[in-house]
Length: 128
Length: 292
Image (cartoon, rainbow over all chains, first blue to last red; front, side, top):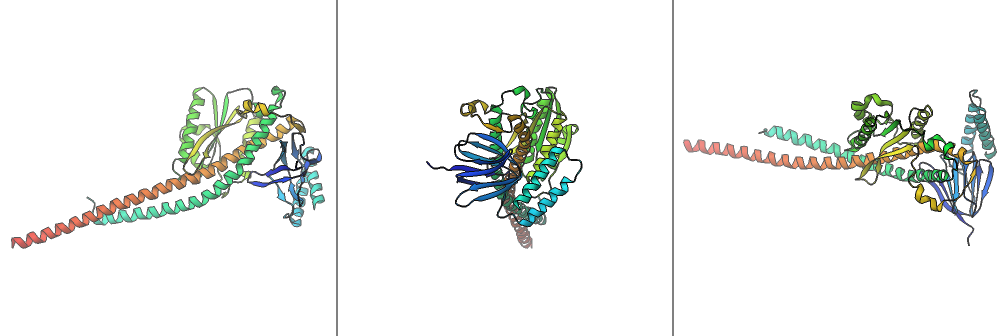
């Protein structure tokens, strides 16, 4: 028996990735989560962070939000902002950080929004 | 009987119209390929999204406390109809088909004594609906300047729908758009998005699984449902874009062919009357010579 399961990353515009893998790490709602074959059915959200897909070579995607469903050994990742990490330029990451920091200074934000933003900045800095 | 000159002019004008329709057909064909591709690429996202929601719905234990977006307000009085049409004409029955379907629905809703509100997307639909149902139209979107529909446009419409729903402006929301089946067939469709229709839930029950939720179901649903509205709108917009180009292509193809037929007919007419006038002149000359 192979230890592989299917993984699909889908955005509203297109299918970004469909492949088989043995392990995926996702930045889930309550922290980093590793998924192996025969995980129990699961639905959760994504936070900003990196999706790592283990293959011969590890593939990484940067996501800001999304929904994840795992069932019948198919991992579905629905997101509107999946970017290939290799192609993501350092400079554009810096731009993103600056943009989010500006947003954070807005006084009209609720605490929750502030929390999400600051979290996003932290991950961006970490990723960078 | 039109004179030779008139016929000549008509042939020329029909020919130049034919050139235009031919060019439009080519453009539509090129755009169609792109639009069709993005429509097909967009399908999995919305389908999977609906599947997830379906699975979530099945595992909700307490329907009373489920989010309103899913189960509805429990009332059936106010309707919001979102009519998605094109911004440009000359695409056969595309816009009229949607409007026809929408209007039959409007009539039904009004006949039942229910409250009606209309949002139109695309200027052509607004023009057609304004005539009879102008007072019900509360908002109009137009994405004329956008070359390619992106998720942003869909979110604008989606957010408007959700904010109206939060203000309790309506109980049910129906989308009208053309479903792209193939180049020749586009099917006008009415899709209810609020409350979410779950026809499939009965036969799905068999392979129903118990999911692990993180955070709990309600929170996920609350996040997911608004997103689903935008997703459905986006899908409808993409299907519409593809249908519009397909419809325009067939319409322009027909127009080009008709123009060709017309040119043939006119040319025969032209040649006949030319021949007739020559014959007439000859007879005149001969009879003049005979009388001498």
